[in-house]
Image 1 (cartoon, rainbow, N blue to C red):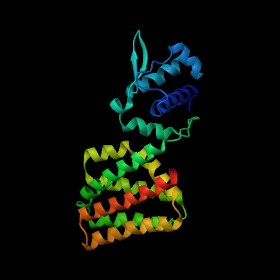
Image 2: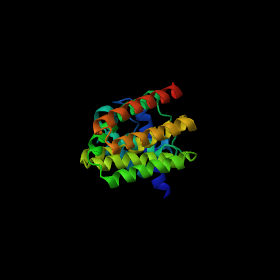
Image 3: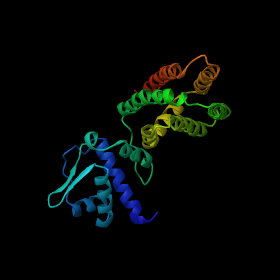
Image 4: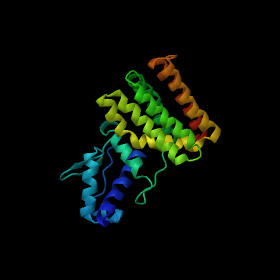
Length: 241
């Protein structure tokens, strides 16, 4: 990566972190461009590139002849901005410890959304789809001691469910939330022992088998999995609070 490009990405990440952590409150006026470049240790060309990206994300309001103001991200930006910050955490010197209350909100969001995608997607499952899904779950069992692979398989299953919905909004929402989902899965997989992980995988396997046998329908499957997710939320809360 070119030095200038790396520098502007670092500044984008730094200012985003300050906004999302509320170090920079809505309405805050940033220092003039020349001073901000000096504070950030970056040339003005790279700084302008960073500021334009932040403006495009609706995080900053650049008023010609007046100054640069922080916007209220809760009222102006979308989940893509938060996902970008999560994606860049740990890169280019950007470190950000996510607020534990925000982590719990991520879980609350996912408990509300994923079962609804399951309800829609499960109605459209073909025998081939069921086989593909079961193959992913069986690979999880074989990969029980490879946590990194488990994370990837969990995300693949989530993406598969989104694809099954064949709903543009769900698909776009799934795409935008991928960094957020990855962080959630990594945190969950990282805080449980092997026995709990195996139980989690086997629960999914059993629910899918019941669906295949006709013992449960799409609604029952989704609501039972919602209960499972709620129990995992409590596990994560115990590990972070």
